[in-house]
Image 1 (tube, rainbow, N blue to C red):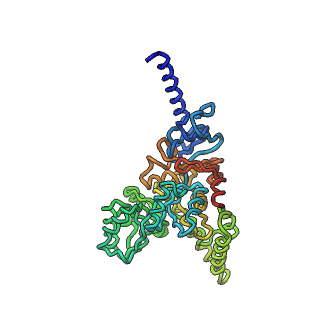
Image 2 (cartoon, rainbow, N blue to C red):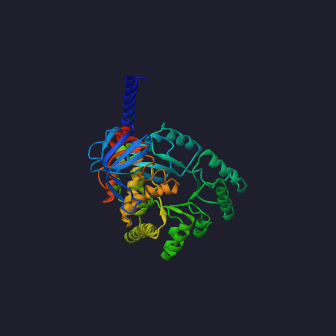
Image 3 (cartoon, helix red, strand yellow):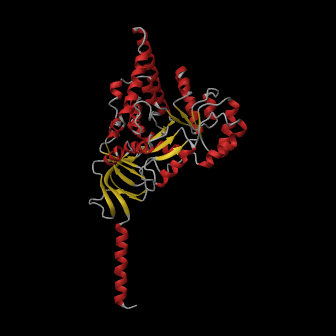
Length: 432
């Protein structure tokens, strides 16, 4: 090979390598403050975060100049980057699913767990995973028990069928008796699929935890034990730590249903601008009617009823604070999306505010709604943190939520599977 041809090949090789290097990353979020709520020091200032495909591929100290090897530069100076939020107890609507998903994204929610699953939802999950349906990542619970068509002898085949179909967990509302419950738990263990849901009345809370019930919804069983004797909580939490039990408290649903928020405050909730007038009118009538019924009676009796409910809600807040202080694992959901004034996605913000009101630190609140959800999903090595190799489901904020949990509302943009959407763009998509 003559020297001219060799020189030509070297130059071509250098040009090709430079081009490949220039396209190494799809995005760089430059000079951003990273929030890692799962770490002792949750704020990592002045970082360059590089994304390629659907993954975070590199995190480095911010360079003094804008990185050149990226297709898109997102200026992060003075902004805050954290994992996307989660809503771990939703009921998927029967219609307008595209709007439902977009509302969640616009609120920064990038993972949801559907707790009233149907076989048709498995197809939604596939469309979501392929990118055909734009929205948060989906986890789908099985059709719930009780199911009068599933006898005790059919449990093993039914639950294995749920696992094979693609459901992520088995949902329980109730069981006919303890024998049925034990057979259900045995079948689920053999199928290697977790069981989650309500506390069946026939099953004491101690047995529920000992049987490896994976997630207790709405504080059921725990709440009753705590109201009788708050000292009973510590041994229950110790059991939960042994059996890796999670809790999904759902504070906001009860706060609304128990009429702890005046109608005029509910009507100012974030996200209502995206709901149609008929829906808001229906929600308004429902809450107004409930207040009217509840306020019937003599003055003293009404006051006593209100005080009783106020104490009930305060005790729920104390229980959540104590669970957190004692080291119980929690995930987050208002369990209110599509219920009166439960705007999908945006009602997660209300739940976070109630955790703050309960006395839980902003750091812990952020950890519960990001890292803990990944821990529940056995996926802390792939999402739930801003870390190299993790899925780029991210939230870019204008203000620091470690300073105030209200700052979660100061959203600039969302990344879902490595794709960048400014909040204003998502809002336009919802309106369209």
